[in-house]
Image (cartoon, rainbow over all chains, first blue to last red; front, side, top):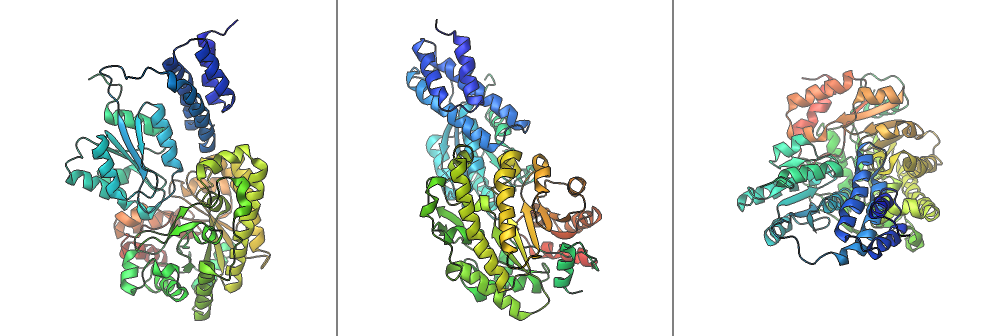
Length: 222
Length: 339
């Protein structure tokens, strides 16, 4: 007898949460073969598991290394389910776009990668510029994709002024009103965020999702 | 007491006439653009020239910023010696890694063995010898990047962190190799005349690893590094700088064989004292405040650190290069009790 949809959704979520990055492939396949909705498999299964992992991270039961393996499991599941999604987005549903990167002079990108994963999980369309990103590239990319949000990260005190420059450039190009700036990383604080006129700071990847949604008004009826 | 006697006494928990005030160098950067402009010695030149490196390190002391000499000014010498590609940065940015060497911990045999008689490792030990010959009674601080930070700069860190779980055996072999190379560089610094070594491992924090892996990978190899350095001199003073929040790993940190612990501004001195007992503590004047606040505020923060029972006064993290010199000088003035 085949398993119920609820049972398989729970298994998908558990695989992500318990870091079963190989088992998840066969579970996702079983879910598809049973004819269940792939979108629900993603949102109620994979993303649910990632969110549970995020809660454990906030409670300091999971750490960054754990979240990375959870995300591997999630992406393995996505690889199976995603090709079966309907091609077009639902009409009228806005896609929130986010440009992310580590500012020039710094190559530490572990935090940036984690924020990217969590924002992607939350439904943002992510444009990852990578690390050691020339400041101008942030502006150009935001313009090109018409991004709602730009996320800047650095782990080094010496490269923090780059964040301020990005904010200034956005102002100069009259893009500051429409594009929200979120910053994070080891030496960053709310005080620094206020000082450079960024729109928000978050101390970790889970907080970053809540903040990002708030800043762009995601999930708030127009 | 001269600055050297004062720091060495404080590190061993002996009496001092007043607290030492230092900034190590390495990850804990103490070079600011203002100092480069005043001395005419610029980054990135000072990263590759022993005389310039020594002169810039001396200027930190001469301009009344801190009571120590410290070299090198970056965290990339260890990885460069094993084959990583480095961008030497600018007068604002420190050197940083741009090319990894390996794709997986299992490939560690492809790494080069560190040769302390060539490249920037030699520049650093030459700079230490030059500083030693000046003999000013100023302590010379040598700096090392910690094993996890070095390991995760030789390959894509996300892969590295995942392999901590998936390829334990290979990770341990890789970490053993990496730590042995850092030991070579550390021993060479000691032999050249360093008085103290500071180990900073920002990529191996409790926040990233969690307590289990922090013990298995960070504590184990930092202790191996400490033991290796002390093969040259069994009582050699060593400080370990811990980045970020520490609350998940207080127990594990106590296993580190360092003489003193330096920590971030997010950790309160009173909180850490509660957990660390009578360990020697160094810190933790906010480097953000040093860049953006005024002298009056910094004086208060320094007084607060002293009153909270810190043993060695220093910034909480590397200085931003745009920090004004007068703000930095305010720490030492306060420690000395000058107005």
